[in-house]
Image (cartoon, rainbow over all chains, first blue to last red; front, side, top):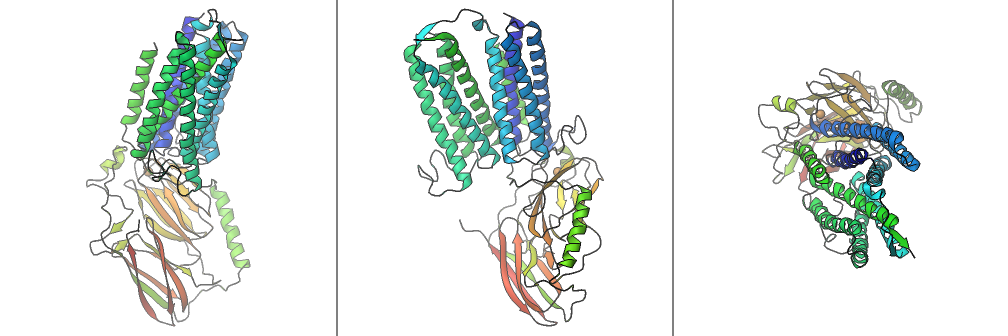
Length: 297
Length: 278
Ligand SMILES: [Cu+2]
């Protein structure tokens, strides 16, 4: 195994998480159009970092840095990585990050059309999951023998399901942010004082869907936790991400409520986004491990 | 390693959040881009359409002109004006020696309501009016729009000026017209933009400085007025007739009144805004 490649991959994944935060801050502060041109910023490489430009151009700079990391990672993998499929995974990550950059440009040039900016948020999470996977696949764990724990197919299905549900939930959150529906329901945990909002507009629908999604995601995670605790109590590889996922879930619910109570304070709303990405990344780790270590009868 | 990276991430997040937080509501709309030349062409086209489709006659001189004038006031206690935090851009801050307040709701002590856009909404039928020469001016000065609320004629160019030594982006959010977003990074920079379709109101925002909001009323006729501090308005040179007059305010919306004016008559009306009911 290549220890430095692994370290570099881990660094890239964490940098991507920070990039997600930086990108989220752009939307949270409504700075997406503070720089009207792309790829240059006001015709410059480094415009004055004032007001909304700080967030938009800051996001572009962090993004360029992550893009550079991905280029290095991809080249490194093509030269040193022996598993062919890993080279292609690196290439996929590189192509994703390039498309993501272009999508970001389009969203600026076309003045933030909702489908494009939501897609930009959705692709960001996919890229993040790719970097997490590469970090995991280059780790010692993937070079040692799998644990070969006997299990049922059901656990894997649940792990996959958790990832899918979390991703859909993230997309709903992105849609909510890009349709300015974040405060369409002004109270939390109730909805206009009710369990079901007494009236609906498209924005309330989107917002309510994100709240229902949170309930579904929480139930799924709790069920997965029960399965993990009963089946793999002594398996560190499963217990660690599972406990981490539960802690993130608790934190995430608080952040969701705080987003409403602070009327979308930019940092809170963006932390909510970041923790959401961490939950997705953690569930991807759990899912990949369930494929590596479990032997289905 | 993971702990160290987590700490790094945390520091990064702090750095990003330490910048004075901006939060401003902002509606998004359809997108579109009109280049200058294209806009000019569209303008020419609109003009020719105007003349051809003319169901109404071109009014070059109004006979027995009437006047509608009056005052806009706010009844009751207005909201306390909020201070603008300009810390996010030091250039803006140094241009003001005194604190700057938000100007969404500008009410004088006697209740006179400023920045209310008063215009003829209905009653002119198909009448056409000659286009004014020259452009309307829309200046960015001291990181504020001057004027904040104003009217132009459909097809009349707007000269947008940056008088500040900092950068602004001019972002138009329209429903009938095309949106645009253009950077103006240099002091003294000017550009011309034209809205061809009537619309009340096109919103202008600067996403660099979220407190910068402006509104343009795009009119098919010359009967519009933006109130000053005294709340007074005047619509002179009107053809005698019956009109619906509207008073539009950016936070409180629009109120209307019907009024009839005879030949050479001057009538006074008043508009009174009140606190919106919850
Ligand atoms: Cu500005």
